[in-house]
Image 1 (cartoon, rainbow, N blue to C red):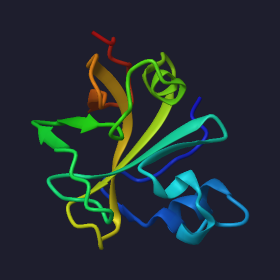
Image 2: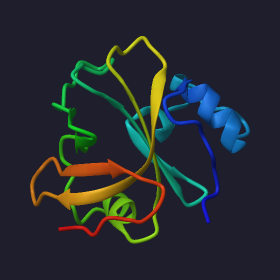
Image 3: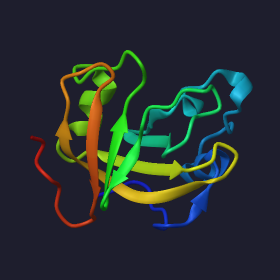
Length: 140
């Protein structure tokens, strides 16, 4: 059973999401929280905030893009498939909420619960995500 619920295709700021999940205090960029680094875990749920076809505020552009209804997503520069947080994301039953935006000054669009379709053995790790609330895809 999922812990958190968001509306697909609705716009959220990181602060909106933090309030919905009950973070207290609400993190700020100055606190150095992983909440602002692209992906993080909170109460056993995972949250991905990514740019699509756009650079992040730090200037990084990881070539995240949609291929049909699936998102091709890259982890941080030195990420790999054996890191604990990546393993948590791709594990069966993981609650992965994925938010994306095309402009680093906009709010994030909620894509939905993300399920891994494939995972690369590369640095950075590249995961193909699909969004479906019924059954999880198997990792290839």
